[in-house]
Length: 426
Ligand SMILES: Cc1cc2nc3c(=O)[nH]c(=O)nc-3n(C[C@H](O)[C@H](O)[C@H](O)COP(=O)(O)OP(=O)(O)OC[C@H]3O[C@@H](n4cnc5c(N)ncnc54)[C@H](O)[C@@H]3O)c2cc1C
Image (cartoon, rainbow, N blue to C red):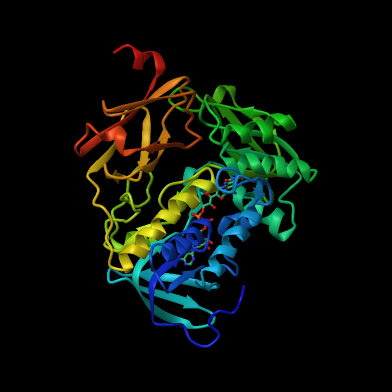
């Protein structure tokens, strides 16, 4: 990373971006495109790139760059754009606080504790993994229990194996990718145990990471006890009933020395919370407008901080928009006011952004509550589109064009995804 500010950090920027992962990088570039002249991107790590730096597998950029890249490859592409736009990058620097007047407080090895004033701020802090403690698995507390993302960092960045015989709880993408990664490194992966009746990761990851390597996936099954004093010795697993209660009389023991937990990510939102930004109770990220502005004036948010994405391509797309919004705000150009509030309806868990306008085209990102195939997506009674299938593990992206909403004049718009026969009955 070039030494951008060897002597002094400027006191004011048009836009400050918190986080230098794919969301932060795309937002910083977007801010320049939106009209900002001085943009600062801050990251606590030594290098920008966020979680991508530890994802050495392929599968990034198929939509955005029309190429199959590794995580670091994708990050490099964006970092080049950041540097081309003359964006200041401050790494090894932790953002402690952002206040409502958009003063950003930073702790950095180079500058100590300092603050920077910003015309607009973009929050792009990513997400953190749920741990064993979050779901309170009973048992002892031996070594060998860790999150799948931590194991990924151990293997791909530090060059260590987490164990020799591994069980994985949860079928999120990180767990699926780690199952394959560990087998390739000679580790025995005894199985993936998933509480829900469906896998939580992308279908392509279930096929390429489990089926192709003969790794068993036990659906509707969970870990009910961890055993071992110094090191994990085994785990007890049990099938669950429809209410997700373990059927203990059918439990069995699985010998292993390591348990990876891959039970979901939680948006990293301490800064948003202290700022008093309105949060969505379902996504736990900020409520955002069509330009990704939060409920606080001039504070924008994007990426996993807002809602958990399965593909980095969508992160880049959404974050560019947030950056453009922030750049325009800082240059004194407010964008169109939203007149439509999206309301998650039947089988829809969440919709982002939370509001849109009838004047422009928008990409809306949905999560569904259950698998359906074939099905129909409906926006109120003004628009419907057939979908081949939806599954909770895959985000649904929908382009909402002004012509779809011609007969809609604003207010609450319900978003439903219903089985195809049900849609056809009316
Ligand atoms: C293990 C794993 C595997 C994945 N595999 C794929 C895949 O195969 N294909 C695909 O398309 N997508 C994949 N994804 C998804 C994709 O990588 C993520 O959606 C994307 O990285 C999210 O970007 P982000 O910038 O929001 O968050 P992150 O990448 O997490 O970046 C957030 C950044 O913010 C910084 N930060 C946080 N708080 C502060 C603070 N207070 N001060 C300063 N800096 C801060 C962090 O250091 C970090 O660099 C994967 C994700 C994970 C976790």
